Image (cartoon, rainbow, N blue to C red; front, side, top):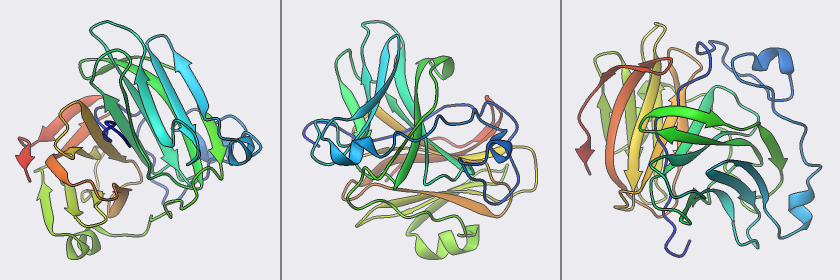
Length: 254
């Protein structure tokens, strides 16, 4: 995606992590841990080259089809300040895993990922350091990606290790595993506690984009992200109690 790099990091869950295995965006009662997404945009984006965007002051997040100027999911920095924007999103109606892409470039720069699902629920947010200070409303779009990422919600930590080349874990039982060539990353929760497992990493050697996977579904579950031909450059596993980091390791270089 031209000079655009692709990543995620640091968003705190807005409520205690839910334990049910699978929850649907379409069911407001099951979506209690996060704000209910707005109704889908009637697949408008599938028939037009224009992306669907959500804004807060200082940030603009967009989801666009392959033929648009913003394919996939992107986040733009729209203010010259000491804060950085991020896009937070769920894929395929599943609320057990939230993804975050932090754009730590300068004003006018765009970061994102082409790897999105058939359904994307997203919002723009603004961070100061690792603290989220502003966020917008949730928006859902459907049928934007020509080759959408499939939902993978049944992988266990043991299966993630078996499928991966590299894994790293924290004492608080959060694990990150990944493999390359059609790169994928797993964030796994391996302890029955109140803490949230996160994978925090950079891809393609780009230090201005940080990716995060927050696994909210509970012990024995893994969230998965895909990154195409981009390789992992730095990574670590962390455990959070809402927005407070409880355990982590130093970043490792791949």
